Length: 484
Image 1 (cartoon, rainbow, N blue to C red):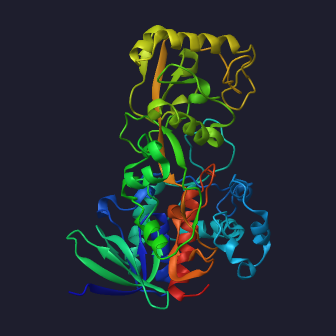
Image 2: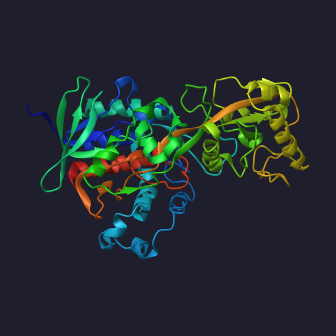
Image 3: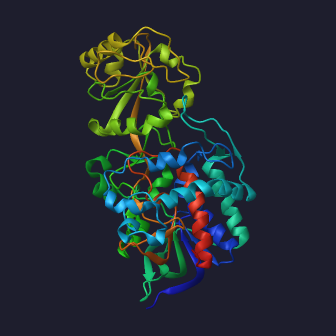
């Protein structure tokens, strides 16, 4: 029996910020649009629904200083300069090897920087308001805005706008396979609904259905045993099971970004709340489950360094560590800004009592704290900025805010690595068109958001929602018109 067919001009898989932006943009360009989400209406929107959605902007019209440089300067390994030499050429004049290469596309980054501001103004025109809202970082290295109401406001306001404009929404509907004509053009996708019925949604396809952090098999495939000791940072990430990436790879798509890393955030493993972040470790020490320090807790502003520190935590036995603060650390003004968990800390009147409470060898923890305390210098301590107060004679060192852990009572919070989103994804050009392994555009196929590869060694903070909106809007407009 043949599958039923639903005819559209543009079919969008995923209804987070990238998918919603694509659907609205395509509809405004005159296309008949279907918007699919595997979740129920109440949980639709993937990661966007749960994020605070910080945006790396100086103002609504200007990206933050150094945004493009931070992306381009991310360590991407050691690519062959004979291939990357063409990076400055017009896209069509580049060697196909470069067009399909997993390094970042300079045109993509330029389009991001140029279109981010206009995209926020476009969202503003659809009812989203923005402000300089408080972040969870007590020290910062860049400027940020955020939508009032966070990602939930994006999902709800833009979701209503999409329906008002005439976008057809399909919940509990999962994209499974791409439909490819003999010409090589993608002409639609196969999806299943809550009854397991299969249908073909015909039209230009925009994939905006996230990474693979919710797929244990893919996490093990790409991250080995480290895949088991992390989890999605919020409930929405569990819906991201990687089909979009896999179905595009199956039709020849090239990839970009680093498939061996994900955006890591330090969270309390006891909490079921979204983004139950622990961002105050710069003011205390981190010890592993054996009671030993293993990382410089304060290499710089926490917003620039928390991901790398979280990776160090993830590399420890069981993928977990304890953040320990003494009474002085607990008294830092606005400390709760950097501790988002609602779970109470473990307490101890002495280091020995704390060790017992967190099931760490008391002798080892005492030795660790004594060695650290002895390495702390005298000097003025300033929790509002990197103060250069550094240890001497202890390994690992601590580069800032090094003061003794000596005043009881003491508290400890458990910290693990949460997977905010995966780095590896599809290679797209500056128009959000998916590129194949031969360096050619796959006709009829677009992708945007976290399923497109951009990050390699370190996440350029507060850019994920921003690029989802920017390239979702671009994808929808191009898919609707078939233009480049």
